[in-house]
Length: 402
Image (cartoon, rainbow, N blue to C red):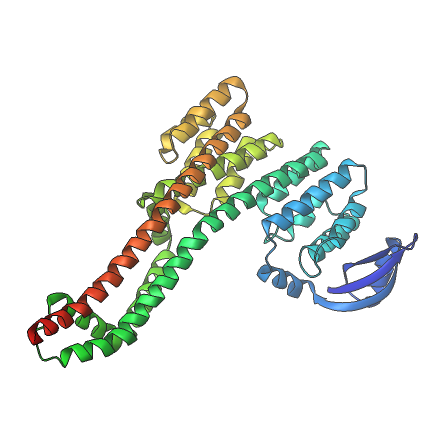
């Protein structure tokens, strides 16, 4: 099956653009006329496999997806037919990204596919959480409200990711610039100065000897350091791709000083918010746990949730298996127990997500505030050592002359 990009007008003279799948150009034109569209341009865009592969490498931001989902929810709530709403939202997107995908989704819907089935054809853009919530919305007749919940969930995830990137940008940039400056000094500037110091023909102080040795090693064996780093990187990568290595690596993430606890709180908030959103949309608990398990992206947590899901399958509630898993912070099973007793499980999970998101933000701000002066102190200490090692023999020589 080939894909055709088209420009067409409907019976009211409104222009439409999009992509349609058909075996021949004639059949594509016939499909468009069956949809009430009169094509003015119909060009081959490639086959379905090529376009699907193309979208594997395309990135649709969470912000863009959230905005499009909110637009679709608003149009459906206003009573607009699904195909028209999809077409209108697709036309408002940038050409070649989400707009083309939504156009294909609309074509699939017009050919009789359910909306969630059409979304499942693009797993790199629409996650299992997204498609399952849409499926529940279609089954319950509340698609507009479910899409609005999805938009809010997507916007919240985009906000958290944006805050994390903004907090890390300055320290990372500062570290890279500082490391580059120090490497340049040690490899190119210091060797020229130390050769002058060696010509003084006097006993050099210990700091100066240490500086000369370090600089000489970096200047002569920098290639060896590069090779060692590459070898370590390849070794770590090969270990991580194994099941045992991946499990060990994912577990160690949460044991790192400073960052480990923050990463666990972030994963817990993501688990809580995602599960609560699914439950609130009418997804059964077992299905919700299965979806969240596949979305966490951490084998250590996935293994723990597998045990939780098995116990829930056997008839247990959510709180007790979470407590027995011993992976998540204590507040999660405690709040889940309160939610189960009160019949407000999703509400309690939303509350847990808010609490941990606030804690992560607070810890991140505190850590960034601490890292900046520590990096400045480290850079100042190294530069001060270099200056001291250079000046000490000069002072000694001047005293000897005096």
